[in-house]
Image (cartoon, rainbow, N blue to C red; front, top):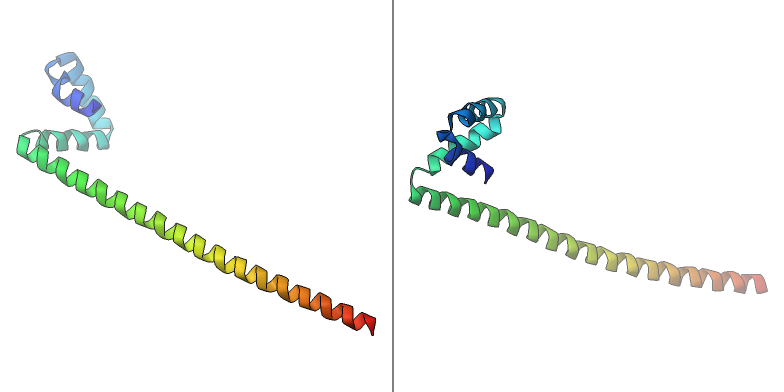
Length: 107
């Protein structure tokens, strides 16, 4: 939003315009944002299309991250179940071994 303010409000002020131009020259990202903003500011329909594309991309990324998170939770739950089953199996076998050792010691 700051870039919008800078591009739309301050260019008419010659004192600030020089400073803005210097900043734009120093920071390539700001220059790219200013260029893009100037392009999409030309037409209200173009701004709406840009917002729509940007929102669609943001939604797509959000959906992807949500899907990954759900998949990770499912995987974690699955492996926790497998580990719990193996732990129970090991505990049972340890109990059998202990019982057999006790029987051997009695002989």
